[in-house]
Length: 441
Image (cartoon, rainbow, N blue to C red; front, side):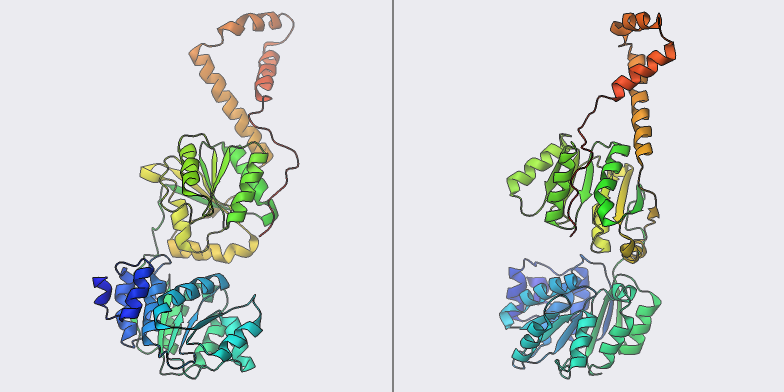
């Protein structure tokens, strides 16, 4: 904790971050916290996963006057999911100081938020639209706000929130401290900083190019949700890989995809946070040993996996942010080997995919989902390869007499084709015609 003490933090905050497992500040925390503690506006370019949330939560907790039960800090995020995550971390950092906060976003009753505001809070974590709703209703008083944070500002702009953000910023006290965190620095972000911030310090910590391994081929399929499972099966059948890693957004979806794959005869297992550690280790051993063809996992469960020769990696659900995408596809193409990453994208998610491309510097090209004809062509090629191998080894001797007898009444090509048909018709896995697909999220 000596490093954090050098940042001038109070004992209650030091206790909280110690309980959260923080040992030493990350680069973004080391650079951002002193500026914000001193009341300096700051623009930070940093990816998710670098500790940026704590980089602004810690100064917020330190700067707030706990004796005043009125909103003094606002954190704007592009999505309700991120708002919930940020609220959880801010609450943990401020626990020993008695910080009270309220998350404000759509999808939950606005009356509950109004009651919390009336009771008195020190900080607000919000999405722009719902915060504007409160402002127009007159259910929130922002006259005492002394600190504003825009998290994932580039994503907010990509999602069309620029005017909403400008509306909020224009209705806050001009004496506030403003912090803007963004994975990229496009012109609209810089214009926002120039128009609404006071001589901000610019801190660049993330590289926006070459974040993914060049040996990994990256493609995406445009797939509506209802077709995702069939698309996954076509990928597996057309490529027939030895080890495939599939990422899903939720534990429920992991279970449902595994159930669907097992119903079609694939050797599939799941990996997620609800599983005990011994069971997770057992699943991983089977996957490493080749006893499992397909491992379906959540991001949390797959942290730190070191499994050789995994290809392809399939993003069944789009990653929640670019950092997760980099982590996921980093499971393939390891140690100089080639690899493949395939991402299923709903038509409504194309904008999010573009954010991933721009942030990581990756070129993710569009391809079409494999067809049944592609699967048949792949099966035929594999059969040809096996036949060529057997011919080279000379293992066909016991069947020579059978072939010679058949040639007395049949054309040689017909005999060979019939033999191939017989070999190809021996299914390696049972595939029901109408399996039950996973349910929608």
